[in-house]
Image 1 (cartoon, rainbow, N blue to C red):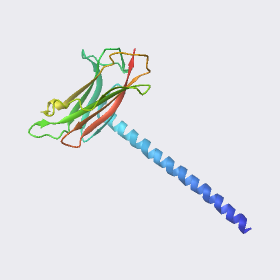
Image 2: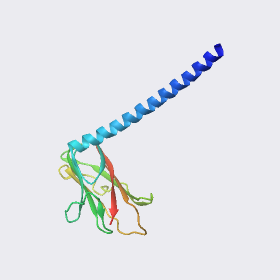
Image 3: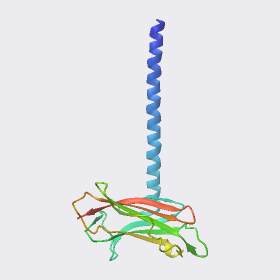
Image 4: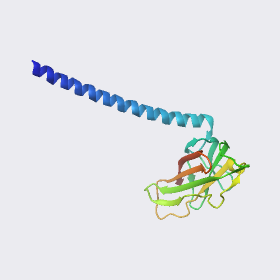
Length: 181
């Protein structure tokens, strides 16, 4: 009888342990999903985001993020463009850059990858040539992506970006997909 109770207690212990592990995993997953939803929801409620731009702003008051063509027309929500037709991502920032005498120092990187994972562009600091700019000019940031040629058809191009304050802790990170029609 003692053997059966011992075996039963081990089985109950294992089941309880598995249930606890499953519960912990489910709780962790729920917390991560809730955080992601809250971040996305808060951003989408507080700022205007178009073109399915996945974006995260820390220490920066971002009010808008959208895509447009060189002529100023908005890129359709499908994010379709053509070969050799540049797409500009516009970020409108209310405040957050650390100013010194009305000037700021920001950096920006941009990476473009194919749906196959092939790296097409990897710019580490697009603003390296302009180390200091007027604070008012830093309220509108524009990064351009251009698929200038194709060697084969891809499902999409993933454009990843980061804009950061070189004098402070503020940064904006994210990505979006472009589709060639």
